[in-house]
Length: 88
Image (cartoon, rainbow, N blue to C red; front, top):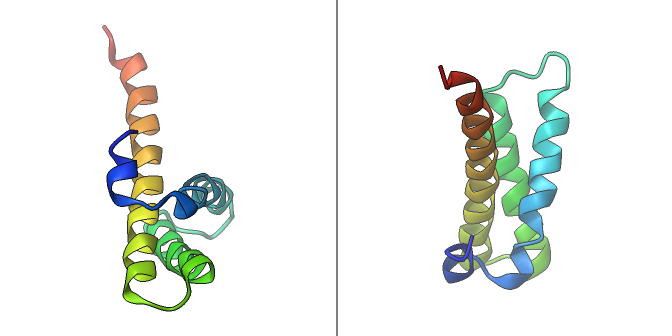
């Protein structure tokens, strides 16, 4: 996770686990389709970083990065979990 420090500012890193939790809640919400979740997390990530940094391009970029990190972390976990059952 060291690479995150190269691109995401320290103040915005707290948003990654927040988005992971929100994503999990959305996943368990009835009538929520899986394809909608990354878009919602992207919107929330941008809004949260704007709340931290104010309205500027850097905040929008940071929002995209934290959203991507949250979705990426979720996919890594899912792929690792599925891999354990694939060993035959």
